[in-house]
Figure 1 (cartoon, rainbow, N blue to C red):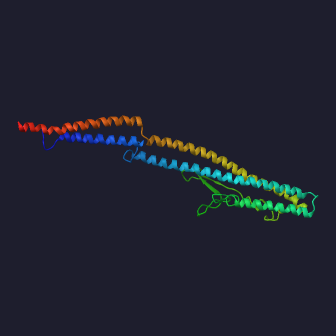
Figure 2 (figure 1 turned 120 degrees about the vertical axis):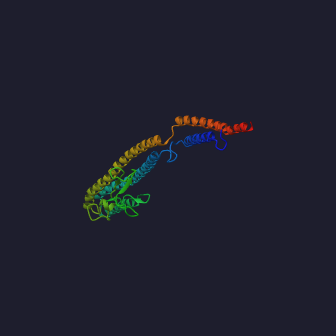
Figure 3 (figure 1 turned 90 degrees about the vertical axis):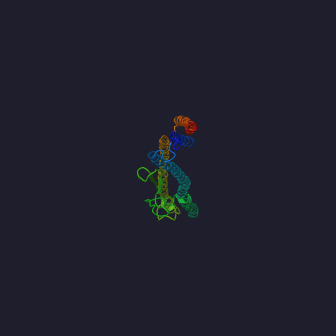
Length: 293
């Protein structure tokens, strides 16, 4: 028996500290639901988890970006639908002015509405915007350049978690839908759609209006194809984010059943160590009986 150093109590104390630390770890994991709560738990697992979390967050934002792009396309397509109505009316007016049953005064009245329709098409094209981005005035045509504060050219839709042009983004290009770009109205360069003030000009304008309708339909068809592509992209991104989330969960989340088993084990061992420490601390008192004897 020793009085100065109670080695038995020291050994039990060390064992108690180890069991208590394990119990604390189990409590932390069960309360947070995470197997990895700090880098000390699994340094490599933590690094993989954080990279996955970053990718998941980026993919979810990519889904929102693609949805915003769909809203932008729908805005442009809706405006082109209104322009379509104006073009149909302009063709009706050209057909009316092309016949010989109207005199020059009446034809000039028809011409007045024709030019008003052309001006309205230009106004709609210039006024249509999404979040400050003008859609139909030609700003979104041409090569994309995002080096300045305001990007120019085709609209870049970024949805992937990286910067690979084949995987993470593509461009939406929308042609100019103003009346002058479509070749109609007195704002356009002198051509067959310039005016319907004469019977001959009205007859030629019919062809120009047909060409304008085809040009407008090409823009709408391109937008429709891009919207379908974006919808497929969203479906793929959602699936990808879901699978990454599942993988991140397997690395990071705690197995509650297994950890609860460890918790109970550590709890029992801690309680046993506390009881044994109490017994070990009482051992030096037994030496007093020998001294007294």
